[in-house]
Length: 245
Image 1 (tube, helix red, strand yellow):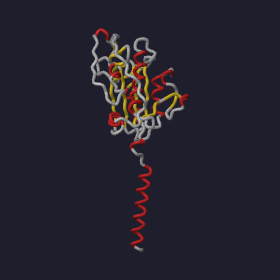
Image 2 (cartoon, helix red, strand yellow):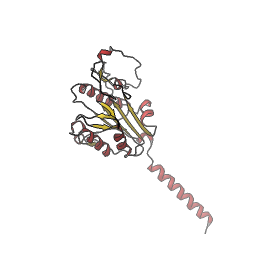
Image 3 (cartoon, helix red, strand yellow):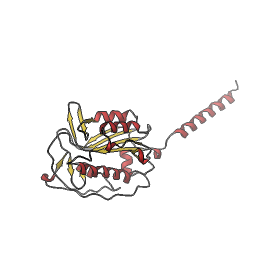
Image 4 (cartoon, helix red, strand yellow):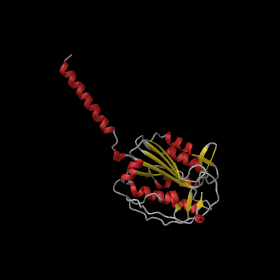
């Protein structure tokens, strides 16, 4: 065997393999964030609050993540990269949510976010989200569905009670909508793009209520930043004006 030629051959193969890896790698800017937003907007008590929550969450992600990296789930009619049956109009909303997650085209370097605004409770099976037909959708089932897609980061955020209590009232002003940013904000990049694993967050702990606000939805959701520089203002209202979920 000609030794110099063998070394050249090995170097050529090594360089070719390196170029193949570089060509197939997805740069950070190519990461996608897939967001599914759902809530009980038809509920006679908190439906209007839930609608405001969903709008605020959509605005928050739209204000911090550029269109090139942000994919919202939508109905078939919208022609989105991630589409399926309209979750909010499905006869079985819980089943539609799990089906939507199963349809998500996320890759291993992407992030999947599911946000729920509505009633919540818990039993021996753990915390669950109360669907419009009053059936439970357990957090663990949602997380399992997201985990089956093997994303870089799985995020489950809900603005829901962890017990059943009577309703009360509260009010806060809404923040204005913003145009899509040219690039993802440092805050959302740090929260949703740089890490791996699972984020599971609810507005209330066991035996606590999540507060709903007549003019802008959930207290938890109302603090989501719609600006690149989050406000530090504090809001207070009489306890008798609270509305629980």
